[in-house]
Amino acid sequence: MTIKPLEGIKVLDLTRVLAGPYCTMVLANLGADIIKIERPGTGDDSRDFGPFVNGESIYFVSINRGKKSIAIDLKTKEGKELLLELVKEVDVLAENFRPGTMEKLGLGYDVLKEVNPRLIYAAMSGFGHTGPYSMRAAYDMIVQGMGGIMSITGQPGGEPIRVGTSIGDITAGLFGAIGIVASLISRETTGKGQKVDVAMLDGQVSILENAIARYTAAGEIPQPLGSKHPSITPFEAFKTKDSWAILAAGNDALWKSFCVAVNREDLLEDPRFATNDERNNNHDILKPIIDEIFIEKTTDEWLDILNEAGVPVSPINSVDKLFTDPQVEARNMLVEVEQPGVGKIKVAGNPIKLSDIPPEEEVPKEPAPSIGQHTEEILKNLLGLDDKRVKELIDKKVVE
Image (cartoon, rainbow, N blue to C red; front, side, top):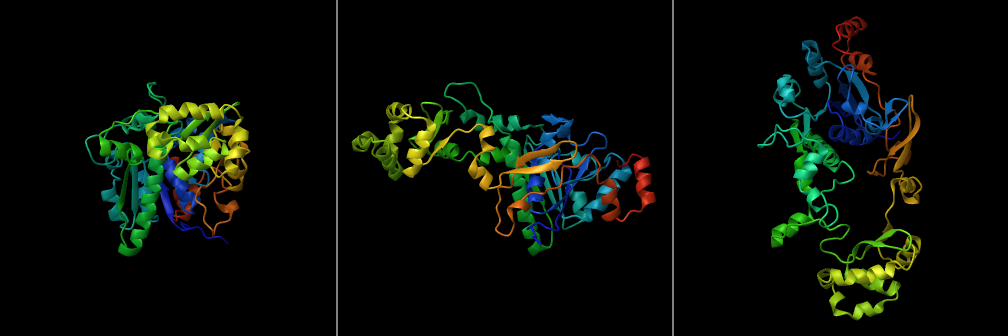
């Protein structure tokens, strides 16, 4: 039987929508048991986000598969007491409320660490739990705007463009998962848990890489460049006879291979293109030359020619193309799962490939839960409550 790295780690998941659920999805893929605490009646906000199949949110399903749901009203005294009892039995609590929310409930980290000193408390929020913006509300697009990434995305001179996926949320989720795993390792040495404070804005700043380097080195304020790379040429999309192809000649050796492959060795003799720095400085001269080269053949023809020459090249795939891409299939990156009321659907696979985990076990096969689907099971098995007490809590609407 395969044992995953986080097997036996129990996570109380108070998160909703995307950053937090994405974080706990990563942990679930790695074997953690995720107990999703939801509001009675409504549950996670994303249950109301489309697209829908037979009334079920595929958005919700895609990032909450394999989790268990217990519905607790945390505004009630008994609901809070139940959470405190659950905290005693778990390793991690994850939440992505606005800072101060858990404290108002009387369930902040300072309280919970007294209940369970080994608890890893992971908080993901728009701006973190410190700083002048801490209490502000945030969504993905807010931090994309504030974090600088929108200022370098899109075409030169164009209107602001949002990155096409929720990179603010997803980055926070990934950093949250890294912080949790690091804290679990640290706990093995110290015996104590700690608080993990991840801000969506911090995540956006941390991934600006070249943009920060350019401003630091030369005081240059980076601007949108379309598909062009700011410091490597040729490294962008070019129009072909039938669509587009990306050429990424990331060093002088690849530039030479490209020129030979397209029968333009004469470009190797041009001092304006002799080094990457010269090519980058003369981008506006070189690009029209390569435009003329690429427009002569189809994308598939260029893929054959340049891949044969060892030059990095790719098409610009629409999402549907991923479902038939042999590399995506070989890496098990689109996985078929069964969801009650929906049937079989495909969701993203686990990009973390571990040699001890067979491909068919990389993601949980259990479906995403309905609201409170596992309430009785968790109260009885984890807290040891009897049928009478569980019924009493249900009747009082403390749980659902």
